[in-house]
Length: 287
Image (cartoon, rainbow, N blue to C red; front, top):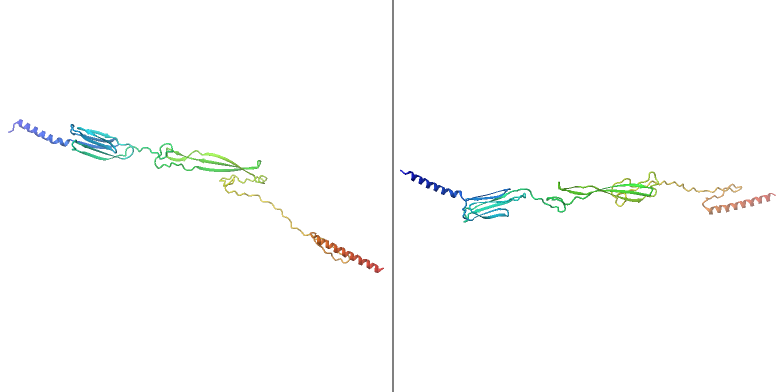
């Protein structure tokens, strides 16, 4: 039968053996994690008398060095709204007990503001229209007939509205309208002011001018002109001459033919002379 002392010694040896076997399984521990708070490396249970190595990286931002029994390292993750890569390595001084891991983290935070329109105040994101739309322009034309100065006055009112950039909505919106007026005149046409009411060739017309002081297409309407009828010319006939005794009418003509009247007078005189001679001859024979 074993003595109690020997039993205790045997148990002590067994405990040392068990601890000796368990220690290597618990040693050389390393782990890496990453979140929006940062990438973290933890390593422990290494031989503190040796220069063990480690690396921890987030994209191109790398921490590297040596450690003894343990190490704790953190690398920040950019808060730019993008996805980033991370990785770590841990190894004992002789290259044993090597640990490594990698992955991606993010997106974290919000993207930084971009400015695609340098000529506008504030920051404009990608896709913003940097050029404003064309100005809104409207015109009205009003005419008045000034018979005192014999002028027709046309007043053109132009309203121009430019677009301005609205930073909160990142859009172009109409600005404050600007109104201008221009006055042109033209001479009153003869007879326009003598009518009742006077003739206004551009009565409140709206639209472009197209070269005319009033409107783009101007059709002038003149009042009708009364034409008096002229009677046709009536031919004049001279009264017929009656020859003595014979009662025959003499030749007649028109008042508009002088040669014919002259010939008729000569013929009449000749006939009268001949009739007188015949009358005297008859008296002489009767005595």
